Image (cartoon, rainbow, N blue to C red; front, side):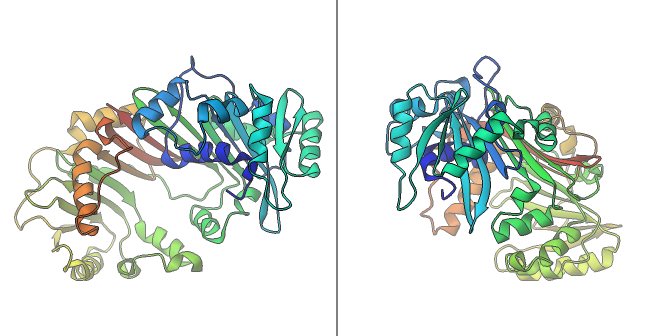
Amino acid sequence: MKVMRAALAALALGLLLVASGCGGSTAASRTSSSTEAASLVPASALAYVSAEANLDSQSWQVVTDLFGPIGTDVNYKSDIQPALGDRVNLAVLGVDNGKPEAVAIVKPTDKAKLQALAKRFDQGTEHYTVEDIGSWSVVADSAAAFQAVRNAESGTSLAGNADFKSAMSQVGDTSFATAYASGSGVAQLPAKLRALVRVAGSPSWVAAGITADKSALHVDVRAEGASTPAAYKPALLRDVPSGAILAVSFKDVNQLVARIQAEPTLRASLPSFLNGLNSLGGEGVLYLLPGTLLPVVTLELQPSDPVAAANSLRALAATAAKVLPLRVERHGNKVLLTNAGAGAGPGSGSLVDDQPFKDALAAADVPAEVTWLAYADIQRLTPILQALASLRGNGQSKPSAAVKLEKFGTLVAFGARSGSMSRLETRLTIR
C-alpha cells in the first residue's frame, strides 16, 4: 500500500485479483488492451500492472459471484469506478530510500472524482495530483514522476521495450489482469521475496496474465531465464488409485530443499523434518484418498537409493506419529509412506484413467512433460480441509461465507519449460 496511496483502491483491485487467482473477461466485455497505457511508462520501469475496473463486465460478474462483492469504505460504482474508467494501470518507476515511486494511468469518466480520490490519500509531504498527458490522466506525487511519463509519451516507453513485448506476447495483452516485473524490479523486492526469486532461478523478467469465463479461472505466469528443474514425464501418476481427490507429482524435491536451505532468510521457514530428507531424489507423487474416518495419505517415491530413502521416511514417520500414524513400505525400487492399513493394496484402476482427471488435464492443456503437476477435486477435498481447519482451531474455525466453494470443480496446476522460458499455469473450473 506504500507504493502509492493515491492509487490505493486501484492497487487493491489489481493485486486482489492477482493474489486470489481470479478475474478475466471474454472478448465481448474487454474494453481496452492492458498494454495501451504502457506507451506512457518509461522503458526502465521496474513493474507494471493493469486490471479491468468495470464492475459491470462479464469478468467481474464471475468474480463477484464466486468471491462476493468488493468491500470498500466508499461506493465503488459511484465514487471509484468513474475515477478509474474501464481499466486501471499502475507502474513502479523506481525506488528511492526504500520507497517505490509509482504512477497510476487511467481514462476516467469523471475527472473531478479522480482528483477527489487522489486527495483522499494525501499524507504529510505527499500530495497527489492529476495531470493530463496525451489522452490519459496520470496520478503521481512528484514533478519528476510526471516528467518521466511525459518523456516516455514522446520518446522511448515500456511499450517498445523488447522484454516487455516478449512478456506480453506470452501472457496476452487482453487479459483481465496482467502484471510484469523486470529483473531489476524483482531485485527491489523485500529480502524474503528476493530469496524466493533466487530459489526460482533468478529470471530476467516475470509476467502474469489472468483470465476467466463462466467455465474457468486461469492464471498464466511466465519467466525468462529462470533455472527451473528439468522437465519429466510423470510416470508415478499411474500408481495413484482411481478416485484420488488430490495428486501432486514432482521430481528431485531434495534439490528444491537444498536451494531453500542455501537462503538464510528462508532456511528457518523450512519444517524441521525436511532437513534430513536429502536422500529423496528421483520422481515422487503425493496423493489423497477418501477414508472411513481419516483420509488416506500416501507419499510414493522412486529414488536412486531406496534404502536411504526408506530410512529417511521412517524418521519422518516417527516425527509425525503423534499427529498421524504412518508406516513405510518398499516395493522394489519404490518406497511408500502412508497411513493406509497394512495389506490394503492399491485397489483397482488408476487416477490417470478417470474421466474427470483426463478432462481436467486436457482442458488445462497440460504438456506431456512437466516440472511438476497438481490435481485436486475441490468438491471432494473441501470437507476434508474444513475438518482439518476446524480441528486446528479447536472446533471454532468456520469456512468463509464469501467464497462459494460449491461452485468450484477441479484444479489443475503445473510447471513447464521451453528453452529459456518457464511457465506456471493454474486452471480452476467453475461448476
